[in-house]
Image (cartoon, rainbow, N blue to C red):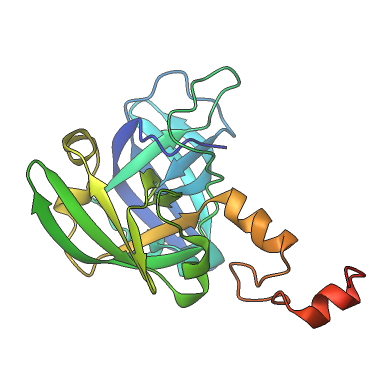
Length: 214
């Protein structure tokens, strides 16, 4: 479990691709890493498989490469990193699982004073899980949704976020990992609405009758 507060900017030293996926060598300034611990890389929960003096190795399955933007990473790429939340830590962002729900893209950017109004576009199946003033995770960063229009939502990147993340260096059109708020997923499940995979029964009078509410 994570909070969506990036604690380090790492760099991909090398990528070893194989039939089952890929192994990433990541440079990071962490101390006292533990073999087997979880680290979110661009919002994707990966397991540390080897520890080196300047970072770690982590594996990603073929499915992970296909369902996230990790498949586009190459040596030299910078990445958002976050070690797993410890019991007793301050929850400065929101509860983030590190399980990416889909890949979106940066649709637009506009400077507003020192901040940057940034628009993201997500797959249609994820749009119902976004709400104004709600939380969303983009490339591992916990952000507050300002507005929602169809499959697009806006956030305001304040100067601190712009300085501590990679967003300013990302071009319009760049792919981003999206994880919607886990609370929204459970509400949708309880309401009988389709999940983030687009499957499930939508709320209807027929469903309520079938479940004994009518």
